[in-house]
Length: 581
Image (cartoon, rainbow, N blue to C red; front, top):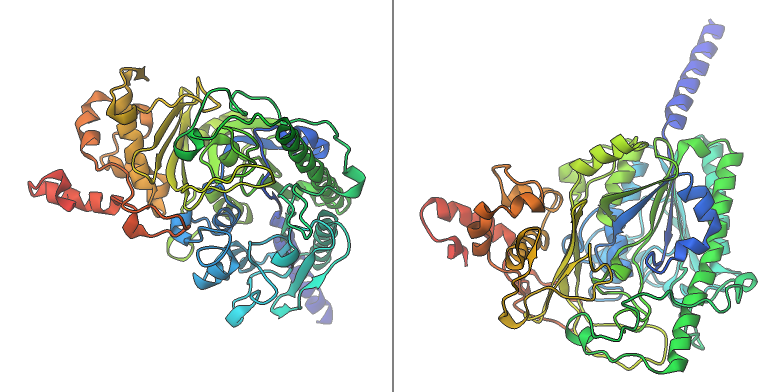
């Protein structure tokens, strides 16, 4: 009798263990402001050897908002910024306090994974504004983590001797200074998390989020990122890679960007090179983190059952379009970011040009973990990748079923980092669209001052130097994809009209909402002449107000797609298309 009971218990234990260990582990490495267009990855040998050669690189991966906190909230919630409404890095419109205010401190990815049996861990920068006094204000702490070590805002960007706040489940320690280099501290915590989960025989989701290569914020000020001592000066003489849009002879962009003068001060140009050098040197420590994580997973015998995702919250520019160091623009330097995945069912040594974005990563991780998204509970705007994606046929099938577009948006002022640049006070709020397939590739933007639009054919102008948008009402006789440029603009404007206030399926499938009859699935089909009148009649994207602050106010955002869809009912009754207005 006892033998039968023991045998049954052992069987149940083995079954439980098999069920648990069968779920893949997930490690998410998130850098801060890392470029892809200035070739930062080429200096990271371990990333090259252990991730890119052993996984797949997603070449057309985008951040929806080129600013830390809005981008990170999108990462962890699967929501566009206009839906989560965290639009800045500080109060009142952004930062951790805004996350608490809108109730997203406990409605995000780690909660969903922990409900599915995962141990969840985080080391590093969670959100801007996560401070000593507000980390658990009114009981609103960062829920869902089995254990975490979050960087605290007052010392988040010091690189050395930073302040961390430790949580273990519902228990929260007060912030404390931790001696050493920030990335190394985060590496050690990440390795310990993996060790703890392996001991528990529990699948894990671990996030390592170093601040590299973000600008340092210290007292006294250091006007560039601070490398680990062993790497400081290792890349001495490194320069910002030359490109047609780096401090160009001709003006580019629109509004205040177009008014920027060419940088002629040689000492400031030298500073830009130094700034770039220091950024890359901080990433050498992140490269070590990658090596240590892969080695740990291999030593524990779980590397083959672990996904590793590597990306950055947003990109960065240094002198591009004559701009001082910074982000917040709709240009490729700021929104096209690194994205690499290694793991079960992921092709090795492959790259893909399918369009992906940060809003897709929460649902992708849920797919990895076997968590089925529920529309009413998760309200995801993105579309997750599904695995396996290991050969050209699988990638081509996935590419054909995914969208071709990325919505990009931002609110607020122009900002610059570093030192020595002339101060520019200007509003930099815009709606933008990146749309691309094998035979076309466009960027289109509408700025909040009503007159500034941009249209770039990225097939022939990847550095975004020649704006094709018809200026000042002038007619542009150029044909693109066999149609007049204005017909192309009409289609792109309509997609932004859907995207700028989209929710869930609207975000994933704008063509389905523009063409409910299912005739159109991509831009090329939409350019058919038979749709010209339809697209000419849509209200144009515009702003009713333009704020210097980062306030997102739907009432100031001009025409809304929901109103246009409602107008179809009016049209059915014989009323004019614009009766909704």
